[in-house]
Image (cartoon, rainbow, N blue to C red):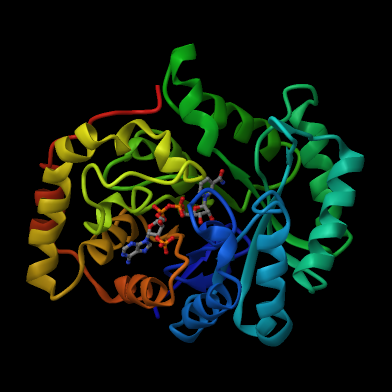
Length: 330
Ligand SMILES: NC(=O)c1ccc[n+]([C@@H]2O[C@H](COP(=O)([O-])OP(=O)(O)OC[C@H]3O[C@@H](n4cnc5c(N)ncnc54)[C@H](OP(=O)(O)O)[C@@H]3O)[C@@H](O)[C@H]2O)c1
């Protein structure tokens, strides 16, 4: 698989990563997978994927334990990205950016992951009660202590701030400018896909200008862009798509032209719509690494194959001309 480098520290990873979240969180059936999920992670590594994206809150904790079982056997082949800063409570998910908490969270992640070093440690969400410089300073100390190789910031929740005015990622960019004064940002993790291209406006250019890597979360539009979901199929209550405005029967039907367009391009390449959706993400810049989520071994292999799909100018123009997605979180 093609390799990509992220961050000024030039960390090398396989061009297509693996989002491990659906194996333990946010998607129905995630908690019953066990050994099948292990096989999915192994299958991704077998294909040349190296970046495994997890977080302490996925499960909570069980996703890191799962990834740790693989790392115990294949640490040298993997690049592990995990996150701190969000705590799962009985009713709510709360942010915690206090330095003491960050230190304890890192030690706990290292134990669960069965490793001495986390390749990329990301702040999942900033804590509004703690200046981000304090949180980031504690994370920087972990690099100095050799527990972490590089730091990243997640910007996935940023879409909820659209209503406050300004651009979608204005808040994130302000946070990035602040933490850069404390310690370099190696990577930003934010949503980027054919149906959610907003990061192309300001966030990705910000990263590109500074040599900051970009981990593209939800690159398959939570599965919609793969063309394997049917309008009206319904989702279990524990599946994030049961509450997602783009996954109502009406919106899934309205957004079918996106799938049709991806299918048309895919046919020219002997590829699948999922592979074209990921190849489109890869085409957005040399520092961009999609992290498609998958529970199934079959999907992990297929998604890794997207690294070999090179979209032409005609393909990219056709995808750019597709109608914008309807329905949003706002
Ligand atoms: N930092 C953050 O706050 C944040 C937020 C969201 C996500 N993320 C990261 O981004 C990663 C990706 O996001 P995501 O998993 O939510 O969304 P995604 O990658 O857009 O889509 C995942 C869904 O697509 C399905 N799928 C994957 N490959 C497929 C294929 N080739 N054909 C058909 N279906 C396929 C999966 O099905 P199965 O589950 O059945 O395999 C899963 O339901 C996560 O795993 C996580 O690591 C980070």
